[in-house]
Image 1 (cartoon, helix red, strand yellow):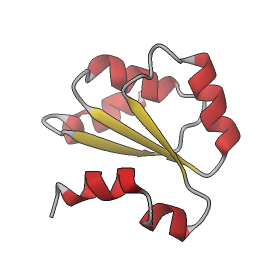
Image 2 (cartoon, one colour):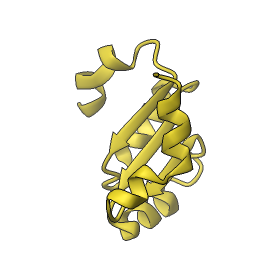
Image 3 (cartoon, one colour):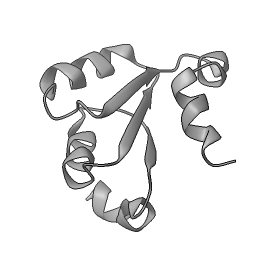
Image 4 (tube, one colour):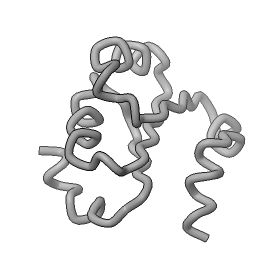
Amino acid sequence: QWLNLHRAQLQGAQVAIVLGVGCGYHLRELAKQFQNLKIIALDCQEELIAIAKSEHSLDLVQVQFVPVNDLKSITESEVLKHALAQFY
């Protein structure tokens, strides 16, 4: 359902930044349906990142996980800097 709500935004995109890892099911489906899409998943709970990686390890190989605990971890993330630089 989440993917269907965002499908129009994802068509033709090179990078998707997803806020919230949750259990990882939405990331797994995103990676499955958009195989050439670079996916960056942000979450403030490193435990959720670890669970998603463990549960869906083979399905989430194209996902880069970024733990964000504060504003500094967002602004200094090289993964995010590189992804956002393509838009400006």
